[in-house]
Length: 138
Image 1 (tube, rainbow, N blue to C red):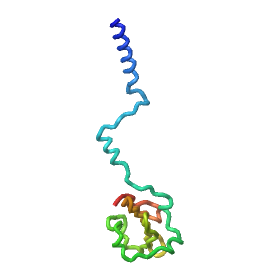
Image 2 (image 1 turned 60 degrees about the horizontal axis):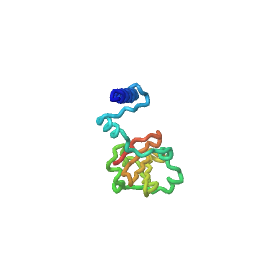
Image 3 (image 1 turned 180 degrees about the horizontal axis):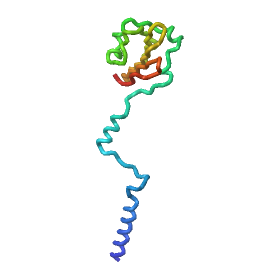
Image 4 (image 1 turned 30 degrees about the vertical axis):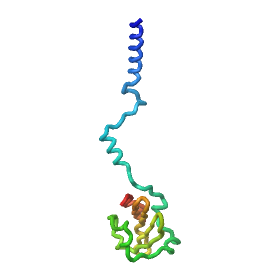
């Protein structure tokens, strides 16, 4: 009777062993610790940019915007290197959870910045090309 138990045990182990071959397409492969760390580092800390963010500010919003002569009181411009805000006329479009500035050259919107205080993140958008220059924490 011991031989019978031993054979059944051997067959069960063999069957289970056959189920875990590397040829199984449903099997997932784990990352080694170095790959795992690299995958975590590759995850962006960026905010999601919407079509509205890329678009120029409306004429209505621009009419209500406040011309800002001194940008020194706004912390987001000290740390960024996407463009020189002092080269343009700066208009504060909205302030609150999202502070939006438009930088103009004459009547043309050149850059738009969106500072999110909660995340301490800054988005710099090249309005003319609808292109994101910066989207990261500062």
